[in-house]
Amino acid sequence: MEKTSEQSRASFLHYLPYSEEDEKLGMVCLTVGTTTVAPHTVYPPNKNDHPVLFRSVAEGRILPDFQIVYITKGQGIFNAEGVTYTVNPGSMLLIMPGMRHSYKPVFETGWQEYWVGFNGSFFMKLFREGILSKERLFFQVGLHEQYLNIFDQIFEEVRVQRPLYQFKAGVGIMTLLGEVLAHERRKEQPNYYQKIVEKAKYLMEFNVYGVINLPSIAEQIGISPSRLNEIFKTYTAMTPYQYYIHIKILKAERLLEQPDVSVKEVAFRLGFDDQYYFSRLFKNKTGITPSRWKQIVSR
Image (cartoon, rainbow, N blue to C red):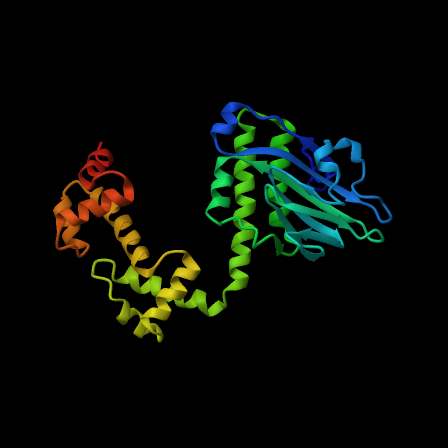
């Protein structure tokens, strides 16, 4: 019988082993769970079900791994890096390796929590690059089914443990992180940022066969070129020029699929006066030359 969504979210706790093969993937899921902490319950409940390292969550602890904790009911407190946050339904907590932290529900209310612990070279790279940052540990993402569905998918992989379940759980964790960070970026940026970026993208797509003219694009939008560059980079993490080159390379890939169109003609169509510059740029972005790309797609 297929589990209902409510059944799949019943109290669940698991600490996971992982292999050398899992480590090579750069993503390992270490612990997952969900539990309802009833009002007037000492936290964490069933303390002895957890390894010693995890039991002191209410008093303060340091973990060698990452954790995401999602609270869907009740209230509580989260302390990290010397800052105290008030936890409400829809709060998401991000725990970093080596970071002293504590969290617990209010004794009178309890709470409902979902969590996943993880590590690996992929996530450590996100940490080193500042994508995961100690400056951003607390997120008010709200109560949304999409987050619970991602937890459900991770829980199911852990329950069944089919081949490569660690990899599939890792993909779920990546998806969860992506949703949380995207939500935060949308909150930080006014709606008019999105309208400006969409208009700029449209104008660049429309002129993909020409040469980028940022002053003209900015003038049509009604802002200065420097302001356009600032907003575009803040919203997309790339400059307008980088985006323009990106769509030109995508268009070049499609043109090179046509057997009667040469590399030289593709370069000319896309506004490159120098075929060799176009070839170097194409290889820099795709890893292979346009002539090699043409050979591959024409097989």
